[in-house]
Image (cartoon, rainbow, N blue to C red; front, side):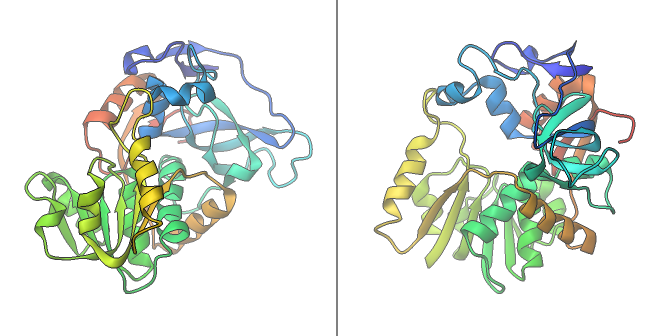
Amino acid sequence: MKAIVQDVYGSADTLHVRDVDRPSPAEGEVLVRVYAAGVGPDVRHVMTGLPLMVRPVFGLRGPRNPVRGWDGAGRVEAVGAKVTDFVPGDAVYGHLDGSFAEYALAKTARIAPKPENVTFEQAAAVPVSGVTALQALHTKAGLRAGQKVLVIGASGGVGSFAVQLAVAHGAEVVGVCGGASADFVRSLGATAVLDHTRQEITDSPHRYDVVLDAAGNRPLPRLRRVLTPNGTLVRIGGEGGSRWFGDTGTQLRMALLTRFVRHDLLGLLAVVRRADLLTLTSLIESGALTPAVDSVHPLAEAPAAVRHQERGHPRGKVVLIVGPGA
């Protein structure tokens, strides 16, 4: 089968197309014929092997699984032993291990039936970004109707879902993005937009019950200044930091400081689970949530798609077309 593989850590230049063996599903797994795959920052972190602390998990000298990709949508091709909830031909989406390939394996607990009213490309944009936004706002922040929410990085993969989820939950949403994406963020339901190229979040007197930082590049004191006295900050990932530990220092400061202040300062490492995917499916099929696809690229152009995700400030999610069903 064709796959986008990587033998050494590095930039998108290390990605290339190669024929690899088709995997076989183990007990509790299904083999998915991939129709479309999502491209997000999570792919970049594994691709570069940075921060270095992630390498014991993903491979010390090079990626343990050379095939990139996590997000995906397609049809079940085969099922492993004791799998009873999926059969060949089912349209599914979720966390696929190595989704930049014609076939990928998935644990049944991490996939769900594809929403019926969206394409495979749209479905592939959902799993990591949609689940991250859902867990940030609902599981971590405990979002309530009537609260005021600030979404930093509102035009990106996670941010575009977070704006819609907060609006669907009855919150008032202000989005932070570049000026060129302002109309897009308003179309998602934001009542106001801050252009980060022209103003800082602290320039406004407004305070927020929940701040979701999906950009991860603002200092903690600045983020706290825009919270209400009992507000909640959820910070996703984090860019920069040291080569060895990345932004771990900020996460540790948040965990320590939240014990002594009235603010809840929370980090998040999301895990795609079927229960969350089913929640997102319900919202998508009801029309409350629409996956935003910035651009679509053929599988062979995966390096260009990753570069666009890194540098292009996409509006929504970058997606690869893999199979004929997309």
